[in-house]
Image (cartoon, rainbow, N blue to C red; front, side):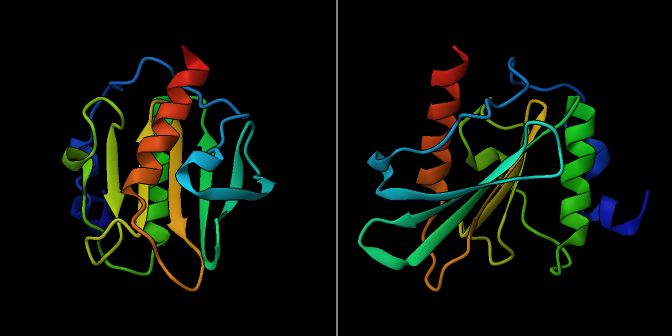
Length: 156
């Protein structure tokens, strides 16, 4: 295991997902209740995976990206998240798994400054990246929670 994998504690990540449903539905997207307007959806080079771009209602300077990468298994999703973390320019991103609702995500990391300006996580068989991409940032914790509620409404 490489030094950065040790930094992220990859071997200590849960061996089994706490989430029953693996895939996140492709039609899962935030609605206007979060004050975000859906701008565009991009296909990603993984099956059933996509990136949605949203803009804050009434503020064109706030935009966010929601990427969902559906993997074949939970193990594959963990490996994908580790690859994504290793590609990050920051040496180490803070782990925030314990700060997110229990059972919602198996492992999660936030922005290098320990803020919720960016969140990357594994949920079952999926990797989720929610990032600010606009001129101004917003706290993405409520966005993450709203996205989880949308996932649950589509999988129950």
